[in-house]
Image 1 (tube, helix red, strand yellow):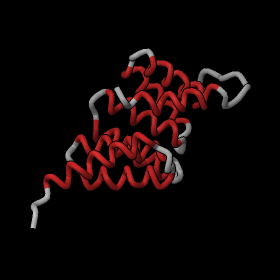
Image 2 (cartoon, rainbow, N blue to C red):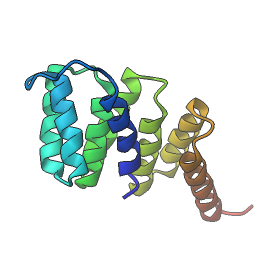
Image 3 (tube, rainbow, N blue to C red):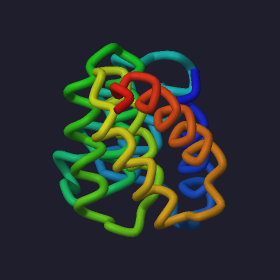
Image 4 (cartoon, rainbow, N blue to C red):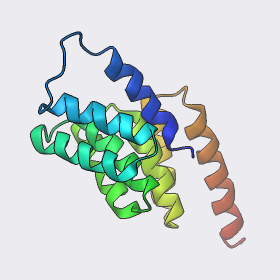
Length: 149
């Protein structure tokens, strides 16, 4: 599933983020467990751990983003959309939530919303080929749906 690719980016970032050992009850430990559980296919466990990380540190954009990824994988597009919005609000220069928000909105049939999110992802990261591909696909799809004058 395409949604795993951005999460893998954050696993790499997290792995090198700090050298101090993690305590079992801190937000970073719950975040790391959530990512690990997601990678093993335990979406329910990942969601629970990421929610706990956010309870302890509600302003963590990566945790909101990865919770959105897990919720999307679990079939909760509305929950995913809310988390992608929150990640974008907390870290305005973070392109990946805009990309995944575009995916979620596109799946719900909101082509204009999806197009806007892909454009924002590309504004933030011009060398984002997946966003460029999806934007091109949706613009073509939208063009075929609009009546010709």
